[in-house]
Image (cartoon, rainbow, N blue to C red; front, top):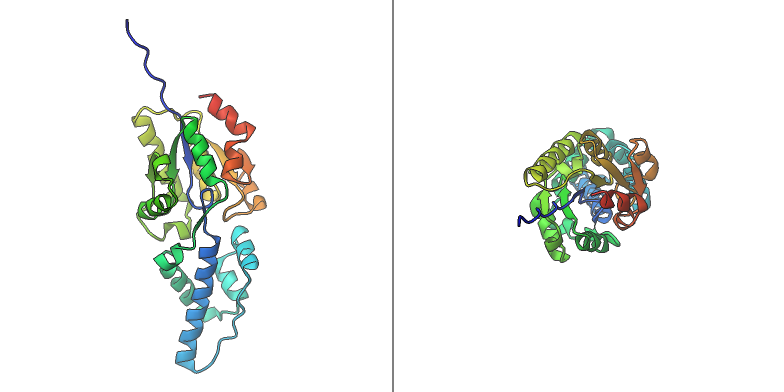
Amino acid sequence: MTSLPMPSKQVLFCDFDGPIVDVSERYYRTYKLGLSTLQASYQQHHAATLPLQVLSKNQFWWMKRNRVADTDIAMRSGVPADLIDTLLQQVQRIVNHPHLLQWDTLQPGADTAIHQLKRMGIRLVLVTLRHPRQVQAFLQANDLSQYIDEIFGASDINAAHLNQAEQKVALLERALAAQKSQGYQTSPTCMIGDTEADIIAGQRAEMITVALTNGIRSYDYLKRYQPTTIAPTLLQAVQSRNMTQVLQAA
């Protein structure tokens, strides 16, 4: 008697920064360190003090979440126009330094969501503009690496900070092709993320798109890109009726 083939495991695609990791403290400390470095350099070369106004974390993060340009954030912080590029280059140089990466923290409930997906037999694939080494280090530090089935990350260590949509589109295409070639079920499926890059990538791949509002974009900003659904956190997305229907359709 011929045995029936085992059903293929369903895949769910998810971003890393935002859904799983809270990067707000690292980004804010990077911004403050960039300003203080600029201040010290200016003092050394001009024997004068720059009249900088350091934004509060709430002010800074509100601007980041509503996609205020970094040049505008610098201007609102009192950085002279001719020094803005210097500041932005400094920020890009240091944002992924280990002494700043230590400020990344696990989003509340993200571990519970990941455990729940694993109990449901879902294959969880991360598609991120972070370098895979950084992702693995964070997952291992939080005892989550064994629950992630595959990681598709960027080779450019600055890609996550720049957050270019076309890079995310290409990564998701590669991740999707890899899952199909391994025989996993990729329809229906979702792309879960917290930025316009995640939504655009999911839409291009004709997936359900789930936008989360606890990351680096606000509800109003994400709504412009017309994701399939918007949820506050990864856990609430996983436990939502819409997600349950998608997973049950497998």
